[in-house]
Image (cartoon, rainbow, N blue to C red; front, side):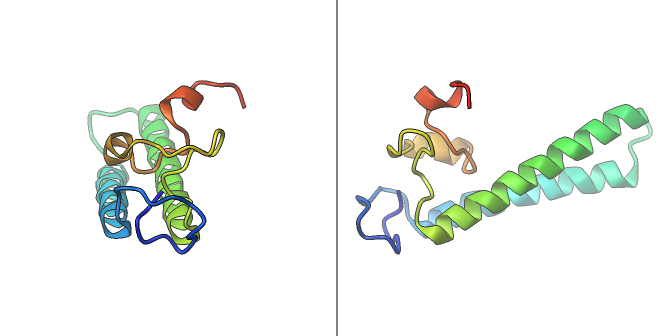
Length: 108
């Protein structure tokens, strides 16, 4: 959970909204650069590989946008399954994650 969360019923977290926004923006910029490279056409890649890379990058952009919405909704950093705080270290690596490590591999 975030320190300046609009939902005060949730306990504060060491993570600020500003830091979370920074992490999400960093991930978004990196993926947009990858997509731009793919769209320019990498002469060494085959069309199937390009399509796969594009779909994967677009899926991650969608996950980043969903994480930004969770940030606005005040639930960023909370596991969607067990509702416990996701460790800040995990969010720093992958700021768009929806689950804690314990819940990540569980079936839907």
